[in-house]
Image 1: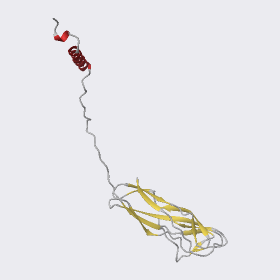
Image 2 (image 1 turned 120 degrees about the vertical axis):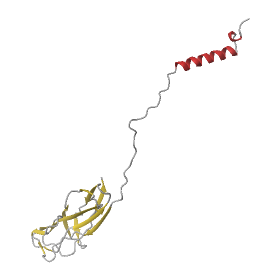
Image 3 (image 1 turned 90 degrees about the vertical axis):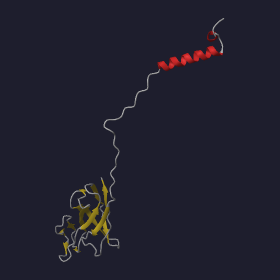
Image 4 (image 1 turned 60 degrees about the vertical axis):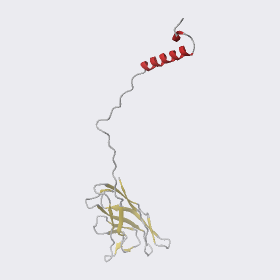
Length: 180
């Protein structure tokens, strides 16, 4: 008589399956142990206070007297005296002044200031004068100081046509500040 395990049938199939599983388990490589990074990784973020920006004073080109020649009026951003060239004259009692702005944010952060030229000032009656440029009193990138403040000024250069009609000429211009 043969042993029960040597017979054919369900028991033999079960024994074969167990033997095959044991062989497969022995042939599978061992799982690698986890390895930690050295030094440990760090997650962090810098939270900044929102920027603020306020206009302290508008840009004013002054009272201008035109002539039969075109001319240019310059209001320097650095605070030096405004002046006129060519066929224009600035009234000495009302020579104009630069625009001033103040902002606040997180100490030590860089801020990019952008001033958009309005191109034209209009008097509302169809007459225009050309703004040749708006200028700043320093670089467009500023560092917020220890008091959390930054300040800047804007000047401009205005082209006045020959025999320019009288009137109050004006336009808005955009000034923005953003963190870098």
